[in-house]
Length: 214
Image (cartoon, rainbow, N blue to C red; front, side, top):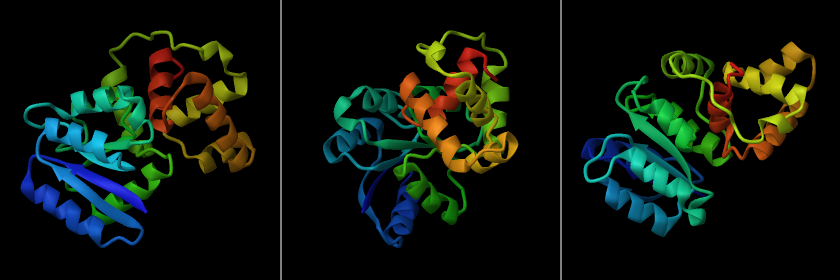
């Protein structure tokens, strides 16, 4: 059972997400919060599998909640999806860098929201090719490359695959380009994540951008 918490200051958004979650088999609604402080307390208490967290909230914004949850070792298994009003919110790249597993706009199709729960709970990230490229273009183009710890531990193949991941390519697409199996791609991605200490695929993209691999 995947336990989900919703944190948003808009009652209609919370109600809509709660109704949607409660209709999905294998998913349990684990609570809701209307402001950042309440959200942090709820997350640290419940330890849900997935959190839908609004970036802009009263008392404590979503980014600060994300920072504190990411820094809390007892919440290491909590996966956070940021909710935004616009798909290119100015805080999106910071959210990914801090540890968010992805982001969704609030008016996303219900099927996309439910898919997000399963993808993130499974250790995946919500970074479609289009969104990934736009995020990189918007937020990384003006930033200078900076060293990423342990990047030198990656093999040349892992670096190559990391570049493809950062371009938004799926495992199947990478496998087709490199003429290897998707399982081999998954293995390389997993090893790169372990070596760099990335929480998930989303942070791997951020590290690729920061290190200049893109």
